[in-house]
Image (cartoon, rainbow, N blue to C red):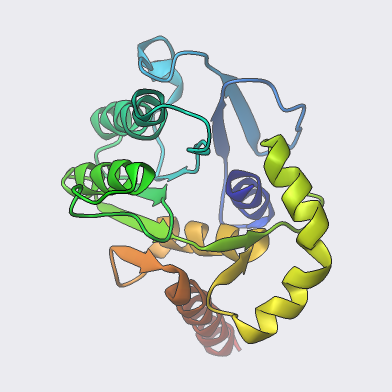
Length: 225
């Protein structure tokens, strides 16, 4: 869902000239700024390297639920896929920013008792050690889908369908822990374009990123006037 939100905000942003979306299956989406690359093997990006040059930022939103999967498979998708993509992009675009979508509870010590948190933390640590222009890690908590966006995980679709009437109300009580796909997409894009001031953005800090973005836009508007 976060990836769909990020794509939507990138396509809507007038400063973004082109969006290259690397996916495992065609989405059917069309836009004058969008170029989709269907690629099956996320452990080896060599066949498409010539299509991944001249990029300024990567918003990496690929992920999988840990429910019902082994640690080996979860590590392959969460850690190995991510590092393979980051290594390729760093070689081709050393001056780019890399923005990684993680999750609240990620374990930076890599020694905790929760499997998915250890793997997320290991992935974060590996990325933060890579010499990109900048690396930003986002750790959202609950994500509220907007604009017709749906999860690709069937169990999540059922959960979101049942809880949709309550999420909007809950945001009034816990605004720092429930982000919409629109908010998260804008925050990820803002990090890729201009940074956030912090390498790791916790759930409660996502709104701060958006407020800072709004303030910069207002300042630019005033300066132009």
